[in-house]
Image 1 (cartoon, helix red, strand yellow):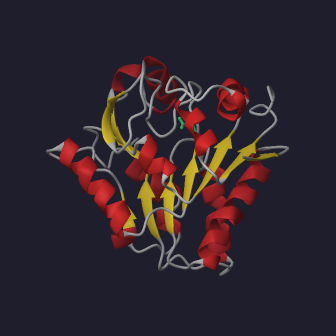
Image 2: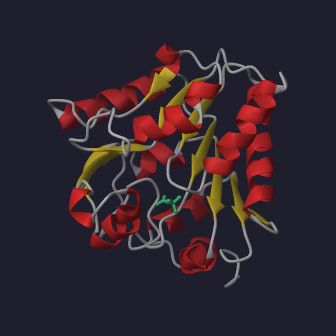
Length: 241
Ligand code: PGA
């Protein structure tokens, strides 16, 4: 694993923005796997800056987002759709038809998950998957469990994740308790993986990801088996390694 420590979040945003845009410069029709949460915000900000400087063109890019809440209106301010449009898609030129999300309101969620995998495959697979990591070691909504879930699936969120995410909602009761998420296999098939972690509350999960046992009780640990992983860490997230 390529572990890079940075002074602060701002620097990581610049480095991660360049990393993602570098992929698009090398391959204009890249397929990008994208993430939500506080972690990638600065990376998206820098991708927008590079686009505004005309350094990069996203018109041939395809995106797949990692996850979405179940039964939350896509127009809700807390949906991952809303997050992605506000933080990235509204500001760059990825055609709407090239933007893919799991639909948490699909009538048949299992079929929706299978169809999402087919869409990723048809697009030629993901070139770079951007990931955050949960304080409990989750990646996307692959929560700690007794076994790894391979492909996209429906998940019951853990109490710790509901608590972590409640900061975006008016109160904890409003946080959806289910989500649809890419699986560990979907993520591991990406050609490259870029993980960003910010803050001391991620330090334990980062330590386990780097040198702990590979176990579904820390889903991120499986990334030890991927051959092209870059970790960008701030001082807090790197404090135990
Ligand atoms: P965060 O979430 O970016 O809001 O910390 C990351 C994650 O849970 O994957």
